[in-house]
Length: 417
Image 1 (tube, rainbow, N blue to C red):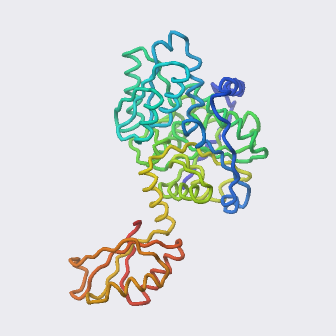
Image 2: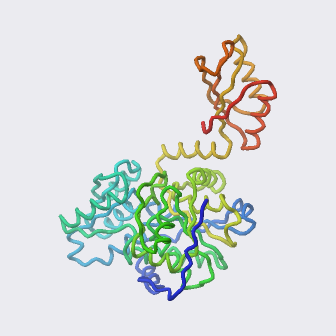
Image 3: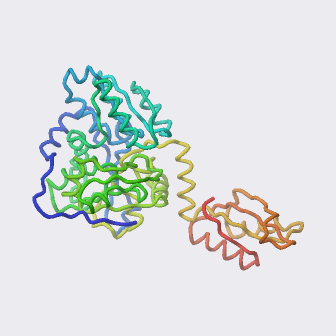
């Protein structure tokens, strides 16, 4: 995990203020849910202080996006509503816009990048929006959405770069303050910055001493370079499973607020997001998407990072079941609970059976076995056995490997199963 200090001096001015966020909360009454704040004993034990989870994965549409989308669209004029709206999203903003449009009686079109999660596409269509696919990223889809707006007169509902969007997302910050009195640190998953900016504005306007930390996927982290440059700078490439925060360029509106009000930006690896997602599923019984697990990943990667009491925002729970299965396996492998080995055994009757007995006696559960006879590294009287096994964690995995080597086997660990 890497960190970037965002502290700045000077007059902290922004386009959105606390009054805007308070007005947004009134406008969202009966629309956005005040999501639960759950105690996390396992994270508290890990960090040595109280940690709570703001469960925005339980929000309507499965993420915080309904807050900003509904606020923005509720303020459109009748003429604007008649022209419809268009949005670009990998899924969460798409669902927020689609539901808000349904509630407000507005026609909605959503441009999604090719390869967007199927459940998010289906949910967006289920709320009544038209879905079209374009590009490989949210940024490319956004370009097409702008063209559509120019061609049709539809109003572009930007996923993060508008004062109403930031104000709407900022209502989550008000809830954090009310549900976690005495909080000292708030960690927020971050893509384009709308949620981070809104939360930071709400929190800092109430108590400037509370630290606000944005968390980005390290392979899709536009904020560190942009903050260093003093202006939004687009990434040349991105690669992350966390589609909810895979944004190549910060928005101008949230960037200004982040620069002035956010204390730090940290980045987390794909491995840590997988481990966090798995831990949330097992320990908190919370289903989240990779982006939604980013704040917890930051705590797990650096337990001494924050002053407690701390709140980690679970920003979304819309995950494709197929991806969930893959991420669980990846998370288990990253935690040492899946073990993939290449083991050289004598090429004689009973050789494989004895290996499996030795693995079982070490307490590992064999999931899959394969043979390789043609490797040039093998002696003429050997066969290579590829084993995928389940262990109890990293210490046990090391114990299994050590035991096999003590039995005379040549063992190579090959990574995640």
